[in-house]
Each structure stands twice: as C-alpha cells, then as structure tokens.
Image (cartoon, rainbow, N blue to C red; front, side, top):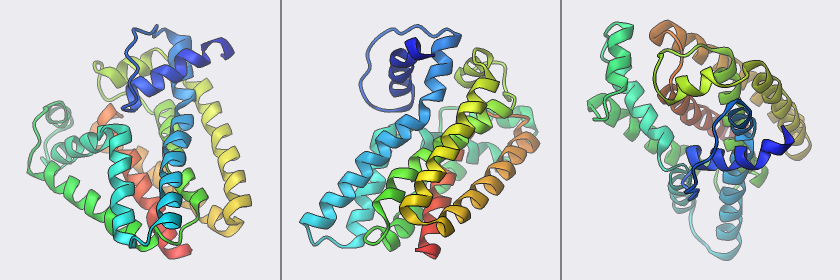
Length: 256
C-alpha cells in the first residue's frame, strides 16, 4: 500500500478534482485501491481550503453571511469541477422518468440535461446557499473541514458494499478492479478517526447526531439505489456526495 500512495493520490486528484494532473498513470488493482482509500484525504484538502477561505473572510472583511455562503458553495463546485452536481442532474432525470431500471440507466447515460435535472440543480444549489448562509458566520471551522471528508468516507462504504448497476462505465471498471474488503476496512478506520476528531473539536453531542444521521442516511440511500437502479453508478455516487453534504449542513443549522 505504502509504495502506491503517491500514484493513488495523483489518481484521486485526477478523477475527483480540478487540480491539473496531466499524466498517464497506471490503474492496476493496487493503484486503484490506493485512489479510493485516499479519497477522504481529498475531502480534507477541499475542507481545508473552504475552512481557510471562511476564516480569511470572517477575519479580514465585514461581509455578510450570504456572500460568504456564495463563495463557499461556488468554491466547492470549482474544486470538484461540478462533477457531483452533474451526477445529481443525471439521476434526477432518470429517476423522475418513472421508467424501468434499464431505461433509467440509459437516461442517466444521456449527456443532455432534462427538466428534472435542471430543477434538481436549482433546488440543490439554492438549498445549499440558504442553509450555509444561516450557519457560515458561526459554524466551527472544524466542521467546514470535516463535511467534505465525511461525505467521501460514506462514498467509500457504499462503493465497497454495493454492486454496480451497469457492466460498463468508469465506476463499474473501478469496482471490478478494486478490493472491496480493503476499501471498506479503510472506510471504517477513516470514519472512526474523523468522528474522534470531531468529538474533541466540536463536542460529543453533535458528533453523535452526525454518526446517527450519517448511518441512517447512508443505509437508506444504498437501499434506494438497489431498489430503483439495481446498484450504483458514478452519477449515484455524485448524488450521494451532494446529498450528504447538504444533510450535514442542515444538522449544523439545528445543532449549533
């Protein structure tokens, strides 16, 4: 594992962020395992950038909460390249077509955005702006750091415990080339470490609420994917990231 960390980190940046990694990297089992195992590190990087931005604006300007929320939401989109929002739009178009599973998967693969996809994007972005604006000036910087990390830990656990809905596609390729048990073990380890850090930095009460909400939401989402799509895809992973982050921000609104 140790000798593949560097390539795994570069693959994580290449596939899940807009950081420019213009190299042809090996993608065998060991490197892809490392890519997924290091995905929470990318969450920490994103969270660190967002937290430092929030600190800088809080301390050096008199900007209101709405402007700060706008900056954080746009910066989050810029760091991921809108990858997860694109997945959300595709899933919304597919799910609200009310077709059979096979047809839903076909619709999800269509690069064009439909009415339901556009509405899902509007609701998600507006929802994040409203929720983040209500908490941005008072929320702990530690939670801004943890939110992108927790969502990507959840992705690891769903990725490693759920079959692919398709036999083709990038997510299906990754699932066929990785060690799911190893990724799951690392996912649980990451979760324990981040929750321990959260308990120390923001208190055990909020941490307990996060643990319970994370567990229930992740299990519900996994079952929802199995019921309506027969498994998971890259678009469904992206939808999970966006939904989990919105859920965590909502929790902060009610528990800070």
